[in-house]
Length: 321
Ligand SMILES: O=C(O)CCC(=O)C(=O)O
Image (cartoon, rainbow, N blue to C red; front, side):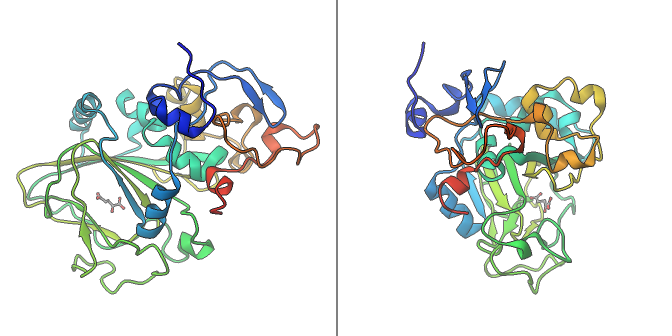
């Protein structure tokens, strides 16, 4: 069955990524014919409205990102994790590796980091009742010279959260955050304490919900006074030139077992300069979505290889950056 898809709106009508985005496509990228094996276009991510909410609040909450039958295998994989907090979990279980390019979220982070996309960290959390496994107020990333100093229009890291157990109310080991605190707020009087803030919100979500968090958002973790263990996963992304914080290198035989897209997103490069200029075999990760404007059309002479050309992100195409 073929579906005629010319624009992202057509794709939405066709049932979104699950129905159409993983269809094989053949296209021209930067003047080079890519008639390649498994090249697809990225699942849809932000709309102008959802970007505006994310930019305003520093957090976007998307319900039902995982279907019910996707939740249980992840719960089982997480329960098998030996520790309360797991790092670089994608290497520890194929059920977690599947999410490196998880179709519910990868379109969002691709909209921001485009062809430079990298998985910076994957983590699992089991926050058990009664355990003092809390985290004080902080924002993610460097403290002495925070990412936001370099420009606040887009985050330099986005943390995707998958919530596998219900968090219907506060004090269940919830993520606690201050909406909008990623904007012009490098200081917080409660920094490095568990003291409440009058502006804080406890994240309450249904299982299967997904969150996107801007790297500069102030957050902490509440005590878990319930009888339920909070189970969730974090997959954090940024551009390739930001260092990963859960690994130096991937295990070679594991990395070589990954699909092309997943292998690229791990960015397990032996040559440091590849972090700035990814090798030509890793370009492109995704081909342009149908109907996506080509801002680079006509800007390069033919001899410039595709891997050395700019390719605008969704944020740039929308005029947001
Ligand atoms: O577990 C959470 O809700 C947040 C954890 C956290 O603060 C962090 O990883 O930076």
